[in-house]
Image (tube, rainbow, N blue to C red; front, side, top):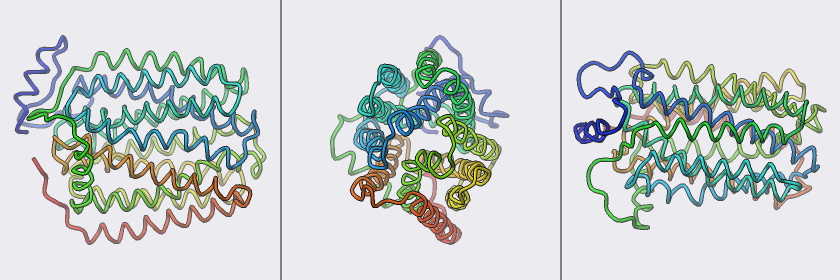
Length: 423
């Protein structure tokens, strides 16, 4: 990379001596790159806090406070709206500042979110907690993407993002499984207390990560940079197709996530802890998928095919979930999880490969913002329709949409010629 010497000098000035290869053969596995290992550990511990906490919040809203579909939509909006609003600006900042410190600020916001849930006594408090979560991950995701791009050689970006995904999905399994048992034994607040401790530990891991930064010029932050990131996302053919597939899929998937706890409660007739246990199965499927992705080599140029296949698998899983039996729900969750693993890691690798180092953060932010905006549209539609929404038919419709988007995207990806790497 053209700025490799500059970055290596920055890294060597830290207390650590990371093994970032500057030339020659790639390392045998990305986890042998020590700074990246600290990032992975931080993601795993932070994800443990996030998933255990989030499953408990949605379950508590549906069961303890008997939230309606409209109230669940507001809860979803409380996460989506700040995420969509803040992530483009956070992406601009991380392109000019320190991904490490941006990451740490995000985890501090997660600590605040869990603290708000601990004192919650109504759905409104849970809405406030969810709002802080949206801010937290609007900060963490572009910072993490930028860190991975700076710490890992280009030829291993798909493997690295698959490893990140595996860590996150492992935390999903551990966090939700443990959260389910804790909910049964001591209630949601016990889950929040454990999540608070895990969030603090994630901060400790991220403090060890070296302060590597983007090379080249760092012009002043301008609002028109958002337009530049959007133009890159729309004009670059690979990014445009990926953005189209994932945004359309997320529009329907968010509908499912908002209504899922009510479906579990009313259609499956399961208790509050079942939300966490079903999320655990989702994480198990996602973990298997992430492990497969992390072992893929030479995937540059084929990211779109993986994304489309992942969307199609997620749609099939959503339809299976909607059958109405517990067995089908568990199987559907596992298939959805596996599908998602083939969406997120290849998408991040594609951005890191073709967007150019100076625009990785802002393009990642544009993707996140537009995808989450689709979630806002979905939640607003549920909120507007109110009691008209019938949960099970709506979930079936969402599954059909996601499956169709994946199949059509796969057809387009096969005809698509991968764009050259911008380095």
